[in-house]
Length: 222
Image: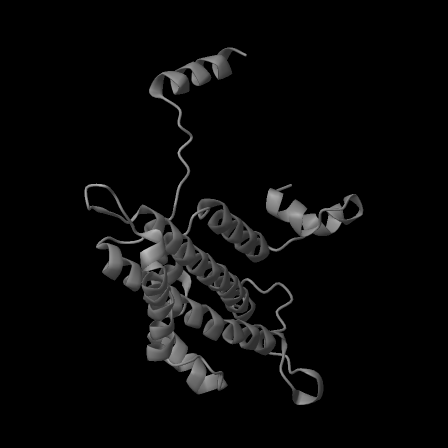
């Protein structure tokens, strides 16, 4: 039994149901799990890769009538969040040493954490949207829809299962888009202030090459 099928129905009494998990459900689970595991420290590029772009959000707004926010306002909000805090905290976090040189490290760390939070929030929304988009796509695809009822009319002529899945996915798109644009604005402001692109903090385990070799040797034997 795959990990995906087991997770879909984790209890022992549901193992029979787990074995019946559709291939599309297993694929979606594995893709979502891989995205979550692989992106412990998401970058802006990771967000933009799965968030809806301008063309996609325009089409969704046109056909579903959802509010996606104004691009310039969203971008400006992301820019201002970083710029305003820089201006407010400049005299506090930027220290001048005895040689008259300014040390930006504290400011860089603080604003880097703010950008990190915005990027993580945007990635979470984008990942959720992408997962629901894939579900809607699979529901629409008759070859991956085992019940094959995508063309059946809903109750009293209302939405059927595919319609509901598509609408729910569409409803997530404006959230992912808005947060992605704000995160992009924050990253742009960071680059403007510090002269380099923001990068997520990755903890260094501090191990030397010798220590890594020793750990590998111990692991092979013990």
